[in-house]
Length: 385
Image (cartoon, rainbow, N blue to C red; front, side):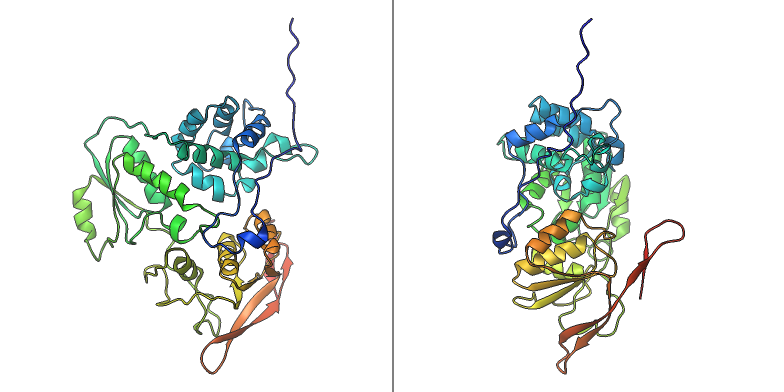
């Protein structure tokens, strides 16, 4: 009887994604600073995956991405089939490979991490590699589409949810029209995430693939203002409403209406697309700071995006957050990246008031130190003064 081949667990030799030098990357607002895997490194990283029969990573993914199937295709050097599997459940692999918090989802359940402080397979980097490889291959990609149903669906909103719905509905054979209030497509992927973190070529590529399915996207159309909702309802057999997270809000502390205090959405919209809309941003105008001292309040992905942007505009950037780094919701590695770029962190710090001068301009921030107390139900610790 032939001896059964034992699986080799490569727990500690993960290939990390390369980064641009901090002194170089912080000079460019529109240059992606986390570089992707090359083909040789991607193949080596894919070979670390042992292709579990019951992989814990797949159910840990919100879109059930079937990692074991498409990573196996990388091992077989079949990028085309890997992308086909990825697009079965997700039209934005290139985007998710860059911005999804894999370390808290699929990578956190990788079996390589179960013993000896092992390191997971670089699932996010591999997902990005597949999408980028197809995009840069020069070969036209066309998704399969079922025969026409004769049914029509109207979608309100061309952000991640609206575009994803359009993609799946179109593949099922339905006619789809998307109505977008803003003059551009992509929602928060375009106006919220800085190009330094999400290459617009990757975003535009996957949007174009959705259009190739016959999806029509009408921009600059505000439902209820430019066109009545009833008119859209009467045009289609079904309506999907995907209007996004809504208008930016401030904290409700004294001084937040001073000149130079902005909501994150207004600041990022101005920096990323040079456009403001009262539907999302309460500010009528935003003057991007350059060569200033900037305070960013918060500790999540949006705060990271604001810090990335502020630094690349040439500012001294300070993060003010009422919790700790360990209890923040951003990626741990992103704090390291910002530290390399000279960011200053004020953990366990809660703003109380924005200080201003006689001209109504921001001159400082009054804060109080906080501490974390355990939650009685075992949840997230609470910050208290």
